[in-house]
Amino acid sequence: MDIRVEKAAPDLLKAKPDENSLGFGKHMTDHMFVMLYDEHLGWHDAAIKPYGNFSLDPAAMVLHYGQEIFEGLKAYHGKDDRIYLFRPTDNLQRMNISAARMCMPEIPVDVVYDALKKLITLDKGWIPKVDGATLYIRPTMVASEAGLGVRPAKQYIFFIINCPVGAYYPEGFNPVKIFVTDKYVRAVAGGVGNVKTGGNYAASIMAAVEAQKQGYTQVLWLDAIERRYIEEVGTMNIFFLIGDELITPPLTGSILPGITRDSVLRLTKDWGLKVSEKRISIGDVLSANEKGTLREVFGTGTAAVISPVGEINYKGQICTINNGKTGELAQKLFDELQAIQNGYTKDPYGWVVEV
Ligand SMILES: *Cc1c(COP(=O)(O)O)cnc(C)c1O
Image 1 (tube, rainbow, N blue to C red):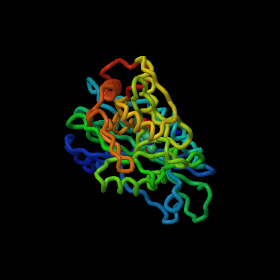
Image 2 (spheres, helix red, strand yellow):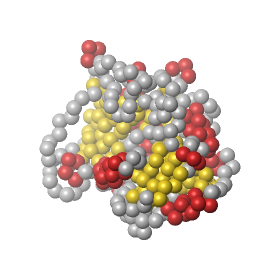
Image 3 (cartoon, rainbow, N blue to C red):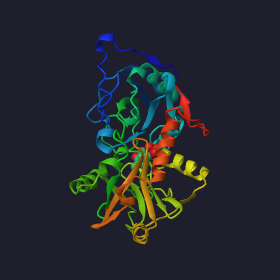
Image 4 (cartoon, rainbow, N blue to C red):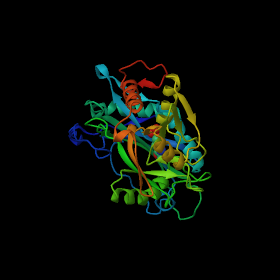
């Protein structure tokens, strides 16, 4: 499939935001990639074009029943003006797993990967250069067919938009406080919690709002059935360092299989740590804390890379971790992953690709 390239007219290029106050997801770049699907033509009309609005029929199926999937990855600015992506085809393959679950068409990974590299190259002036800041990439697919029947749509729009995002920790690591909810649940095995579809996030907002009212930045989700076993936190996977064992919940169908999670498992195993993917209950975490063996807790995800947790609130019981400070392992993982992603250190895993 050919990818048409329609560049924005020079006088329509946007002013670039200040790299020191980017925030997250506020400023979109000058161009986007768009490709259409319909049941007879398959994927067609692939184009890189100026960033702009879509025209959608008000009956477009995504607006009613939420047939939508997305991904999140980043482009990094490295030495000598090089541009790197971190495990990009893993994101595109994961998107196809999400597509299958949501009865949406698979994307041609080679075409989309090629389009992504062309788009990043065209908008490379948007990749921030300040330490820790990156270009966040958002591939998305929505059902565009007009109709109010509940069934798989026959037409879709796939697009990629990009936005420069600031360093998650401009003043160094700041451990987050998380609130364990036993009132709401995020996902259940057999549902869609293991794929990146918009409905999961819509369903999570209320718990997040209530946690924020109490001064907590994120929600820690427990399993939907017993409300005991740890699942994940906000939009991150979670790890516990208890004694000498690093523990993360297994992928049993209700947890998103994070690429950062997978990278952390790989690195820590190679560092010789004892690493387990196993069920861990909130009771296990609290009792480890009482015994003094709970050494570190941290979340993992593309946006923050590593997010140390300084406090957990479960039913009003406050559990302070590592005196609310960032642990050694979290710091080491953050430094190593960032160095690999920006091409500052050798990548023995083949994770990083130059654009
Ligand atoms: C995206 C996401 C993650 C993290 O996945 P990464 O591939 O590491 O970015 C974890 N949990 C949820 C619910 C997510 O949406």
